[in-house]
Length: 115
Length: 115
Image 1 (cartoon, chains in turn green, red):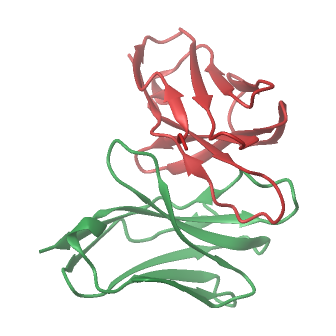
Image 2: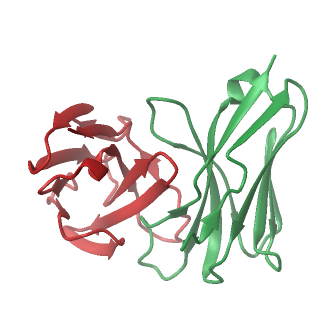
């Protein structure tokens, strides 16, 4: 049972345009959501996160939106740059004090930004 | 500050053998988690250790085991290797204190190939 789903395996955009990556989840216990970026031969690196008490979080070119009623979140990258080309993973965690290291990841979306 | 270090980076084993992977977390981080990444499956949680105790466990068979030492370094072991165990094994660490933000710091991974 895939509790976090990224339905688009890949996304291709032009440099300077907006990239929108989507993620859906099914577990109502999730209360913290994160996006990670991964380049080949490297480990994933943290990009941005959002708590379930918010519906938007911005960090520079990156904005994450959360729609709790739809159990959907999205990552917007504006403007997209060729260096953003990577695999993007959506992840979720549940509160409880003992879940520090346990994230549930989506399958990833390969973003390609063309110059 | 040194990042998460995983050894070995690459290894090849044959079916039926066993393998041990090592992870040194970021200094001061007490929680170490392990993830398996395979094509099409994304990152799947194996287990998490905190203060030398396994605190969370994913849905993997008992052939997958781990431990954590008093200096927070961790090892994971896979016995009786199967072809399907071929994957990138990622270790991640986190402070595991205060509010659970879920942000993990990943190593570059150990690429295991089972022949």
